[in-house]
Length: 329
Image (tube, rainbow, N blue to C red; front, side):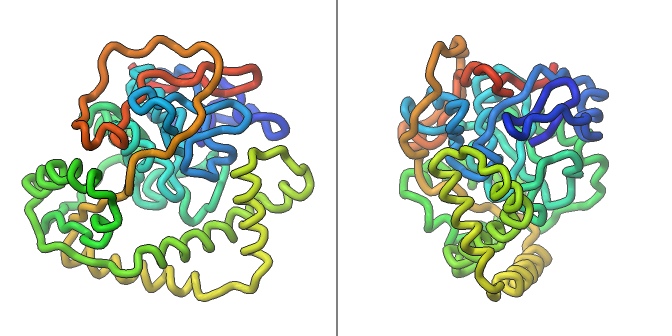
């Protein structure tokens, strides 16, 4: 969640008017126009894209289904042509998942590649700042001010993570096949690879994330007792329970996993992974009048239309909400 001094951030009891961080200043200096802010899941602690207090951005290409999140408002604004690009935070998929579900481009840079100063932490050792765009050229153009010069040369080719593809539903695998083949055509194709134990690694991540979240927000939650929506309340209760237990082997396993990936990247620098398993789940949309839908949207094959969903409109702002728009010229 990237703040800007011109617009208050958050909702009671944590609303504040923050300073504008350097990354936003760099974008503005490069010619971007800040036209507003978007909503997220509460404290960005969910991948559904719903907000109990301010509603859910509309997934107009898959009616009745959520846009996924947590950076749901940013994805909705970009996919609906309300903005050319939008920033989002990604701790455990919060840019990548809504980008996939909304049929747009999204990037999560390497941790620490884009400074996160001014961002309200969720789990600091995983938090990153990413962005969305409908067009790959715009995605790259935004990366210039945010990433700076990069002289690293990527060689080797793209290697599919076979066990990641195996987790996806058949329709998702089929829809990704032509895209994966295009990446392999551009970068060169390497033999498939397997990481092993992906479901187990996910549990390791979730426990580490929960401990960091409770360390960051637990005292505030217990003191203020905010009125979370049911799902977010349950997540914080789980984070509390995890943190009450003695630390397990998760930190050591994270280090081992990082070493495994580093070794794989040395041998085969390019990766092609499958992230989303299936189309987004059913969910309620925001209530009230919707903005006019855009006239055009990226096409999607029938097999992928449910999960490569493009949003044509976003939730209108509500009283006290920061759900407006974000973009550039």
